[in-house]
Image: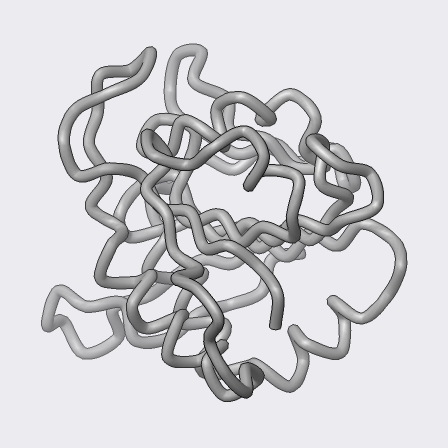
Length: 178
């Protein structure tokens, strides 16, 4: 495990003047990914507003979306599935050509790091808080499927929809749409 986790700052910032509320999902994901790490030589998490340009040349795990994470905003146009903020917020997959606008839509993308073509980038996010929650849950419930698909050398896009099946205001199940 040699990646930087980058999550959006909770204070309003960037072109959309929006703060991130995905920090709690990042904590869950760090716990998940921690089992692949044997020791820490340095801190591996960064806020998008504090990350150095030199750190962007590493393997990256980005959490959030283009409105809450300014690093995602910088590379959004280069992603195999991108956040479209024109009109209703949505995610468009360049692989399937489908556009998804349900706020419970999450996305998991593995692609080449646009800041360094020798490194990889993993994006875990969604249209909003519920979409990011769905993508994080996908890692916990279906890690074996996701890890296997992320091993390929090709770009990987997984689109998921979250559901609150027991009505407690928490996404507790997901369906893979792509």
